Amino acid sequence: MLKRKVYQQLIDWKSSQQRKRKALLVTGARQIGKSYIIRHFGMMQYKALIEINLLEDRAAQQSLSRATDTQDFINRLMLIARTEPVDGSTLIFIDEIQESPDIMTYAKFLVEDGRFDYAFSGSMLGAAFKGVRSFPVGFVTEIEMRPLDFEEFCWATLPTTSPLDATRQAFLDQKPLEKYIHDTLIAAFRSYVIVGGMPEIVQQFADVGTLEHIRPLQLELNRQYAYDISRYAGRRALQVQAIFDELPVQLEEMNVKFAVTSLDKTARYDRFEQDFIWITRAGVGLKVNRVTEPRPPLRRTQKASNFKLYQSDTGMLVARFSQSLARAIYEDSRTVNMGGVFENVIAQELVAAQFEPYYFMSRKAGEVDFLIEGENGIVALEVKSGRDYLTHASLAKAMHAPGYEIDRGIVLCRSNFEVRDGILYAPWYASICFSQL
Image (cartoon, rainbow, N blue to C red; front, side, top):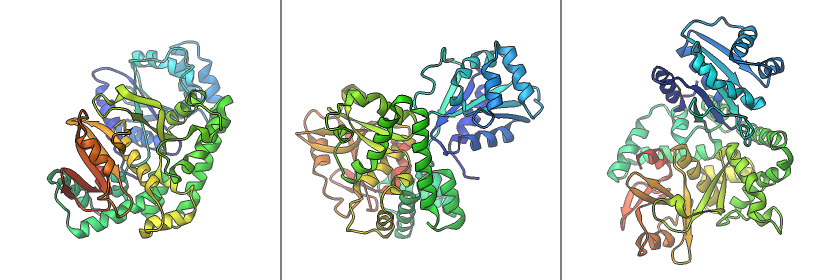
């Protein structure tokens, strides 16, 4: 079984039940391991697990959606269940809740009833709960799952965690790692860029140790995402699909921002705004808005109509290009521009570390790839996929421009840890240290 950081969050939720009872809602894109982790959690932490899948069991979905009150809902649950509940130690897990989102209105009353613990899970493809009559705010703990981050990938694929521990210390000390550790993690990071963080694919890579058979699985996942768009995006499915199709094209061309006119020559952002919201809520894309001032709070000057769009999983993104790109990443080719792909990985890692990343661009300073707000101020990050990582005029200008409040600059690149002119050059794999910011 793949070790996931979210498991500790489930443990924390269970222990918090003694203070204030809440239902658990785990959301996220398809095939990222939501059902598996909740099922494992239920089996390990409770004496009884009752699982109902609303997508696979249509009769159960129809029965529960017809309940008239809380007791009627529980009665229907017990008649559907194939497992006997155990007083005080039963988790009722209702999966694929997006098939009947109004069932969530019962969560408040089920929690107040107090006989069982409840976990709901769903692929939040679009605003699945937007039309719910009364979402039980205050009675639900929501956890959003994402693909495995690079550290979780290393847990599955490296024989020991000592290189990760050494990396954290090197990040704090701002001193280089031993070369063999650096080389090991650079190779692991390149593999992660290609494999990505979808659990089935990571498990396949961990079991076999080769990239064989990875690409067909990724292409199938992309097809499933396209199918889900057609199924759940309603009347805007064609527009959402157009965005999904355009995403790798925009990254390949290394546009400073997503060109909405690529969808339609006369297109304006406000016409497609809800479609971009849908694709990010679905966990399919990561939207990084531009800010006009690098000062806290960054959210204050964000421009939602000026943004970059990344795919939520690097492996699924790489599979959408020709296989020569994956080969270039693996072989460290100098002939292919991989900047957009490496930016995508860092965006994925920042979001996994619970940051809301932005990018900055101005006539005075140029473009800075990412800005985040850390505990000690604003951190600017530049991502360099090539060998010219010492060239970053925009970052240097932004850090020294009067009136700007950038407290720290980091260049993520192939280099070992090194400090020059107040800027930390850190290897790509230092993304495991983002939480330290």
